[in-house]
Image 1 (cartoon, rainbow, N blue to C red):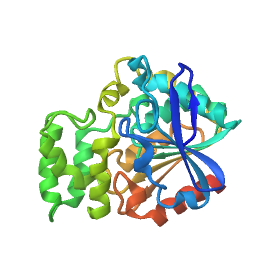
Image 2 (cartoon, rainbow, N blue to C red; image 1 turned 120 degrees about the horizontal axis):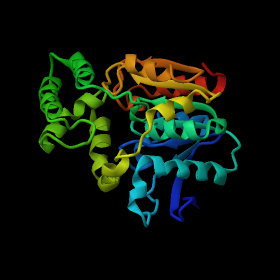
Image 3 (cartoon, rainbow, N blue to C red; image 1 turned 60 degrees about the vertical axis):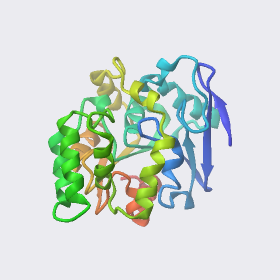
Image 4 (tube, one colour; image 1 turned 45 degrees about the vertical axis):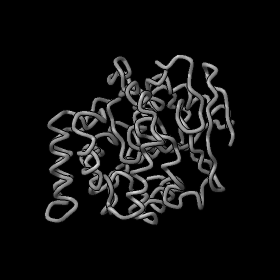
Length: 289
């Protein structure tokens, strides 16, 4: 397991999978160990995946100053990894809440990115929050059968408590009931993937991730216009975070942004149709939009 030392002396770890051109991968969670990304639906078959464990997660060290869990402080970690790898420009993939870190990195270091893939990303960094109505719109696409009807009822209770983004607000039991909504198929693989979050996420770090002062949306939007590399925002048909229309709005903030929607997929699309996911991302990384 390779490691490197980032800007404040914290030792961070990353994991390597596959052979080929390097692809730096930033996990979401927030603050979930990169193990949940797996091999990204077989993407490692043609790429050298560099799976970063964010500070305080997985095999990475805990920083002396835990205020640095806030996402804007982690931009320096991604830059330190790029320098450690000796990459003048890199391809970058970020998932879910990790999309905010990728957006902040892109705004701060636009010249360092070749192609960027944002997979079912949140976009708090550019003030494009997902609304409860958008989340429920996606959830209700599943209505009419179990376990989805029960899951929708639980998700409505969670959203009424204002807890969807913070990971709190609403009984823990409701989160368990709502879990099928985040996967295209609620099968054994999805259940195991969901259960693994309990020991893969640093909850203390997650609470600090989007803390007060983390975001300056006007500055970030201006920075994204300086990104000359191509950007693919990949949404999922059954995912409420983000809905395809919001993903398209995020793509439009980049000079060379595009959006695509994976059919029948949820928030972790590489699990739902690995071949579709890995093929689409590989085509983009190889040939652009």
